[in-house]
Length: 406
Image (cartoon, rainbow, N blue to C red; front, side, top):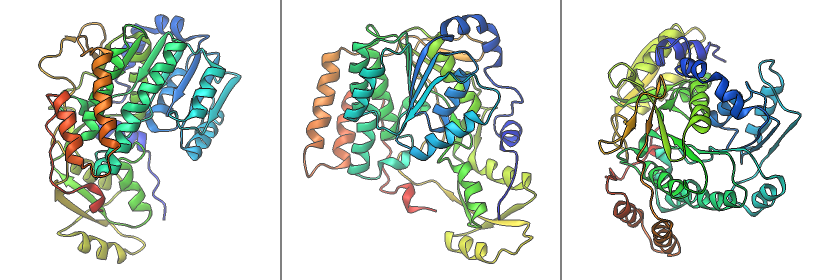
């Protein structure tokens, strides 16, 4: 069974509540400036097969760039990206367009970069983005390696061939982080800002991307297509943007921001922050069904096995969140950060981002790499080091992680 629905329409109506893009007025305001800064440029996108990276590519292909190189470890994702773009009529695909299934931290990427550089615009979306990716020391090391240490190697490459614009995606979870993923992104922010006097660097903290790859809402559709039950936390509220808005936000930040800027969407914590359980119930109603609320995972699985061809109720298990690093709400900035709320219609900008000395960054990296070189290091040791350098980091440890749930 395959469930067909207009997800874009559902997102606009039930998730973001916006019929037009959040960025529409800003794109109108800066239309000519964007064109002058983008048209004719050579562009490198790292992590371009993911939801945000591919949405960024679609946003920049509304302009007229001269070259596009896309790198991602997801070979199948790159294949679909190419098919999607070339099967559409709305994008200005340059003649010089190529994708590579390569890890941007590998030696072959350095060879590729030096051979094809310089690029005018470089955008990096390669990241571990899930809180579930911090279940033990191995997953934590892989996350910090990808989100921070490899980003350093990229920055050192860019010093050799400085672009006009460099963008590296962050997350709202970097503001007062309670999980290692958010702390790794906060550390990434401070890393790239240490280079902001040498390279024009910008980043953005933004909301969950509705129905993005790997997200819980997209998982609802996957479970439905397989007639598997839903599992959803209660009371976990998040800001959401559409995939289109995520790409447009990153494009605006990467091109129009000043070096050292951190962008975020102007969303209202009362109107725009919604719980996952509401999305679940609204999606079922949108599909002509209602929730069959179950008390346990086992009950939900048993009921899913008994679904007939014309079912109207769908089993769903709602639970109170008890996993590591789970924050009941999100925020984009802290009290000490200086905000520019006037330059853009629907975007705010943090202007006083922390800019550490590179020697201090080296010290942080040395501590992390020394820990990773040991055989008996534990997750708590990494938390201790991150807390030392990130005073706002207050890790929530429960001993449970999302891989233990449906």
